[in-house]
Image 1: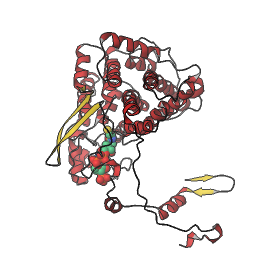
Image 2: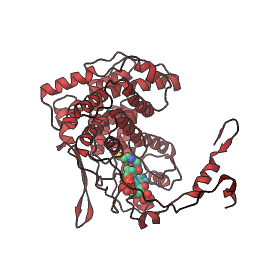
Image 3: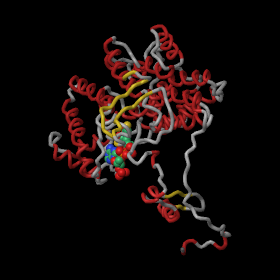
Image 4: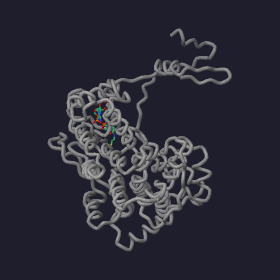
Length: 458
Ligand code: COA
């Protein structure tokens, strides 16, 4: 790879060599200086960085100072996420809006509060005048997360009071962003289709009375049609992705930015950028590519030995994207199970039966069964590892006919509820800029006049 201008032809491999010559650390450096790499304690638990009233992620217990694996549990404001989902299924209603209220305000809404909140969100779904033309249609992006981040940042210019960090103002901005991020996502996707996939784009009028899940499906379907059960399923996925504590990378990014006193748009666009990463929300897209490659490379989907050996080749970095990761597995907190993956797996099985995709579902199950052994044997890791939220979510979205371009963006339009709740908590109760330390490893050097530099010979 190289870049050329009128005078230079830089080969990036040479520049990388230059970088490596003057830089570098190794694992011993980290140990010597007791660096909490990844903000982790030696046993893998996260360094305690704050207190929160919003969510609890439980995946292990501590006994005699040791981590003891446990069944995963996720509670929003003290309420088990399973209970929220079961209530929505039993009462046959959408739950994402109720979840967003719970996360933002701290307790469940009354019936009338919920109705008013849903109407408010509906009324705020539209983007400012000319935003679609000026901010989304111009300079389209192949990547919807990139476009969403840019668009959220651009919303600053359409806000009459963008920098006010009072609780009232952040709440106003948060509700607007929760309402309109799905609109940004679906518009950005339509523009991407037109610009890069050479397909038609369409912008249906928004039905302000619809739930978030319904309005997303309506915007994605050429004829605006979808079934009630499809919308309920998407809603379920959104509830499960809405929040996950203060330490996950994107929420922590929100808290870091918020602690500096910056504006809501800057904090939320940073969170979107973080979520895009393949070790975080972007893993759902990587699971899709990994499973597609696995299906192509494994001749018999019921042959566990063949599947095992393919998974082992991923970990040995011989196949896949070279990261050595089996995407959709592992978690900083969960050990025996990720409750979100458990619910999504159940959902995927039901849907697979309806869509005649049980063979594919069985393949997912086999990968789930074999992966812990593969990691234990190939990596010699003793860490108890389970499927995480991203393993089955893409499969569910696939069966709902949702394009893979939107797998991670759908995570973002759900998680924005949690991000906003944490921004509000940080701005209201944090009170100190988040500022860890980096130890400098550089020894003192003299400045050398340019005529005397001859580093090539060093
Ligand atoms: N595949 C292969 N190796 C994995 C792995 C996976 N899914 N998950 C963890 N590991 C490896 C790590 O790379 C690390 O190896 P190293 O010591 O050689 O660097 C070791 O196991 C211990 O890692 P651990 O401390 O458990 O992971 P973490 O807490 O630092 O990271 C994740 C957690 C989620 C980032 C990690 O499990 C991962 O990258 N998973 C795949 C991506 C994914 O699904 N992300 C979605 C998260 S919801």
